[in-house]
Image 1 (spheres, rainbow, N blue to C red):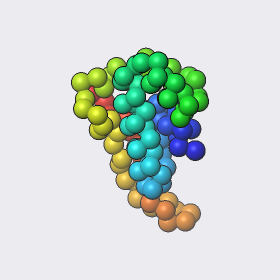
Image 2: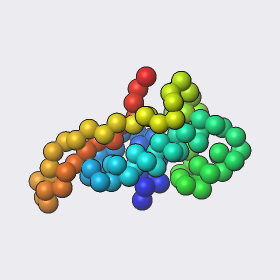
Image 3: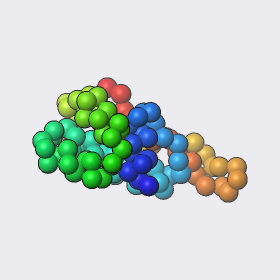
Length: 100
C-alpha cells in the first residue's frame, strides 16, 4: 500500500490521506528519494523492489531526485493537516513534495 501511495505522490506531487498513513508515507517516500539521489545500479534495484510502478520510478530518478540534490538526507515532504473526515472523524492530511 505504501509503495503505491509513494508512486501516486511522485506522479501527482501530493496525496490526500489520513494523518497516520501520511506519517508512514513520509518515511517511505523520503527513503526512496534519498536512494534515487544516489543513482547507482544498486539504488535503482532497491527502488524498483520497494515501488514496482515503472512510470513513477522513472519520474523519481529523472525529475524528482535531481530537484533535491542540494538538500541533506531528508526533508523532501511536508504534511499539512486538513481537519476531520465527515464520515468517521479521522484526521485527514495532505502529503506534498516540497518545491525548491
